[in-house]
Length: 322
Image (cartoon, rainbow, N blue to C red; front, side):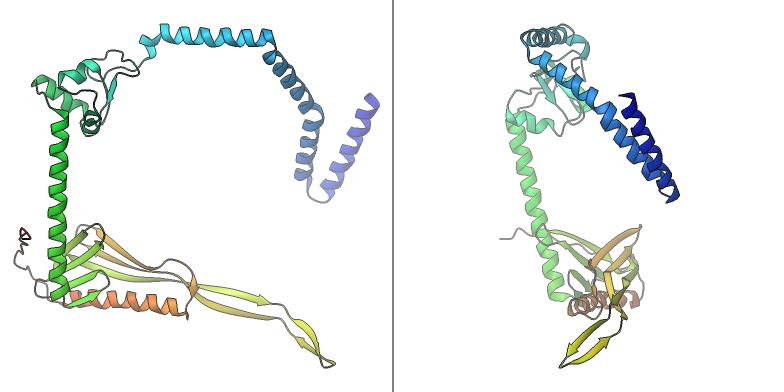
């Protein structure tokens, strides 16, 4: 055995010496370390794991594991008051199935019932928007609520607000569509009202309106990429005649992104992206993206060229739609 280990060590020394001569001594050290681990360290670990598996799957091992699990459960139950969750208001220990989750904490059944919250789905939905401080204030003022009625009123108010937002969005957009001085995509401007309308999300009725005076600056940016391509030469035979094509190098101009930054008052920057992947600069898609960006640029330049003054306050009236 000692002779085998000695021979193995001699082989390792020779291997390391050759690696050192080639300038790859560190790689050789890693290789030797992994080899030693596999030969001398891994087998005892595998043997130990096998012995533990046999012990755990034996009758005695299963009994020991069962005793450990049962003991752990009993200890957790006995010490629940120490580690269990506490109510954010009265600081009592709460059962795992008897807590209500608020926006910033958990409360027990006693505190839940003190403000009229029951175990319904409406209570769970309302509790998501109520803070611990607000519930304490409700307790101090002895305010009781009906969760179902409260939730229905909340949904009705949200629906009414959404309808008003929808109506206002289409009222403003219809005006700019009919009276826009210039337009580029989702950007509308009106010299009459001296306003800029950005149709941010047409499917969600999201928009923003700015005065001409609020446009601080804008900048159209392009990122150019030069791709170097090397083509190896080749030799071919055509009708018994040898033709040789020499190596060649060429460059392709590409654009990886085109975007426009619009800066409004208060360091409010809006970005419009026209190209977000690399394509050849002379491609149709790239030229189309450039034309769209330049159209935005012309519209914004028109706004910048207008004389600066404080326009009269403009109010949009929301009609009933009947």
